[in-house]
Each structure stands twice: as structure tokens, then as C-alpha cells.
Length: 137
Image (tube, rainbow, N blue to C red; front, top):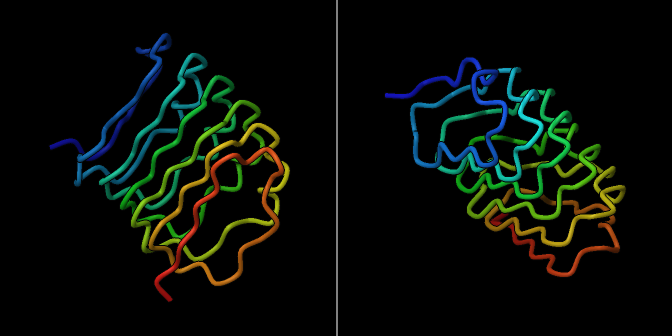
């Protein structure tokens, strides 16, 4: 069973990293930031509690999927990800906070966070074409 993705440097030209469904996966290595061609990261249905800050170095990342994840907040570093266009967090029951800095994400077009614990939604980017937020609190 996959519990940790240790060293990403062996896969520098990787465009998609989809450990979706690896329920025992608890951690991504900081070396994930070396994947400069990564376009999609899908950590849905994993036990990852937080993404490493090195994700800010994923300059090509356009899609982040965190469905049914165990993270309580979106990583602050994502607001600095220039090309991130889509964030999916369906049945993201642990999510409690969305940073007010999300408004700075000029290229974000889709924000789909369903079944969260978020009570206060900050101002969202004007670039959003498809915002969908729902809470179960």
C-alpha cells in the first residue's frame, strides 16, 4: 500500500499525478515542487492532511482535485499559483477555512467545494466562471 510519495525528482517531466484512491497515502514529498510540467494533481480519496508548501513551484498546474480529502484548509501557497484554473473539493467535509487571499487567483475559473464546514466565504476572484460552494453546517 502506498503511504508516501517520497521523491518526485525521478519524474521531472510528469504532467499528471493522480494517486486518487490511495487511502493510506498521508504525505507528498516537498520534491513535488520540482515537477515543473505537472498540469493536474488529484489527491482525492487519500489521507493527506496538508499539501507541502513546495506546490507553489508547480508553475504549470491547472487542475487541483482534493475530493473527500482530510485537509482542513486550502494550502495558502495555492494563491500564488499563477496558472491554477480549477479546484475541486467535493464532499470536502474537513474544510473549515478559505483564505481571503483567494481573491488574488486571477486565472481561477472553477471552484467547486461541496459538503464543507466553511461558514464564512471570502470575496472570490472575478475570473470565476463556475463557482459552486456548499456547506453542511
